Image (cartoon, rainbow, N blue to C red; front, side, top):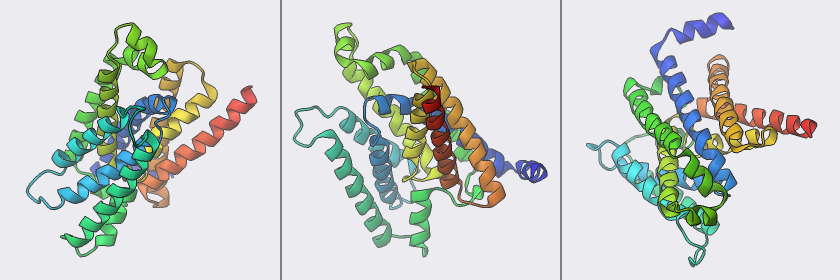
Length: 277
């Protein structure tokens, strides 16, 4: 088993997959804690479907880099969802559901009507559930992921205390002079970036699992906000590496295997949390 892993690690595309997987899992886990605490867990799912719809539209423009279309659309959707007030006619959960289903349906229609590939079903499956082969990741993908991941990490570290305040008590944050709306927008932008860069690895349907499961697992055993963030990050990276190793050995889809590993970790943490009490 070890010899097999060492053999595969000698290939560039496997190392690319590990780097991308670690970076995406790390970034996802950081914002996951905030989204879960603010009861915005489903926003990752909604945004991933928006990104899928944007990706379908981007396929119509063959000469344009898809990220230049997908990223702005997803960021705008994230800002609109997170900043939707209580006085809105369509409440937050309903808005996410409508946007999610609508974007998914429109994206699928566009991919069928304007398809440039003979294997539409295969393209849709790969987009929804992630790359079925480690060979799909290239050096350019790694560089792009590294740049966006660095942006996410820097923003989170710099504004950590303000994000903490906005997460737990928006009214108190406003009273202390913090521009809550600005930091809600920042959170929306960061999560949109994470969703877009994570789609190639785990797919638009599974990326929300990387946001939710590590955070919930950490909350089962850790009580402090900082402790939960750190534990969530470590757990997410560990599950990503283990999941990819299992995928290599068992020849299973990368994204689904990583998510399955996260689910197993959540079950273990939940049991450990109950025993700890």
